[in-house]
Length: 276
Image (tube, rainbow, N blue to C red; front, side, top):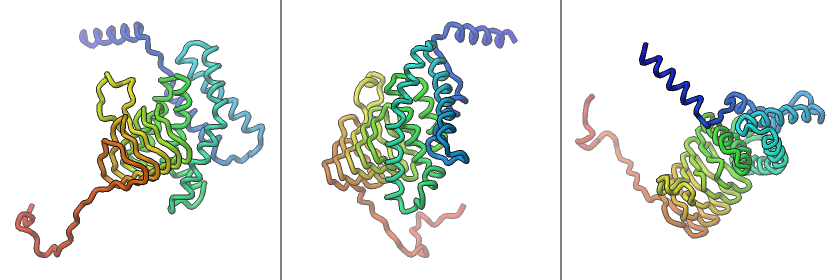
């Protein structure tokens, strides 16, 4: 038990000497889900006073989270005010995102279906609120919030990315969007897409590492687009499973030319005639 006692002493010393500040993760998750419900999901009491009570409670929750990080009530109040001042604009963006899904996804029958059942929309919502906190330089909280969405949806969007209006994620599982990616308006992205970096060395941390996607681009499943100098021009279509590390002009179609063969499976090649 001596080694275990030494471990306890080391852990205690590290915690006491640590400059890191942690917040209640359960409360952060609750803030994210409750804000989503208040913004979008119907209530039995659709009255202004009830919504004001909900927002007052959410204000207090966010204030406590930021205060636990900064340790300064004045700063926490300013940061919380800034977030809620920006919330009307965030809400407008999210309404446009939902409209794009309803307009272009043939499987979407109603706004209610999008709000209740679309992981891509929830991931977009979390991105938009975490991006606002990222802009306010509340750095730990937005990173945690984005990873919460990642764990729930399989969609990994860094809060530092810049994403325009009418953003549409279809299916979404496996999408990765890096910190310095810039995405324009009316962009559609399907599952398994990576907007990543060519070089992941630490020396590149403060440089533009992820690609630019201009307006009205469609990126189909499995496409990988890498590099801070890589731009996909507007109105382009990027086909599935392509690998792109250089810029693509506007109005381009990029695709893999694969070969599929269909033959009678009763006459298999010798190499496929095996028994396990």
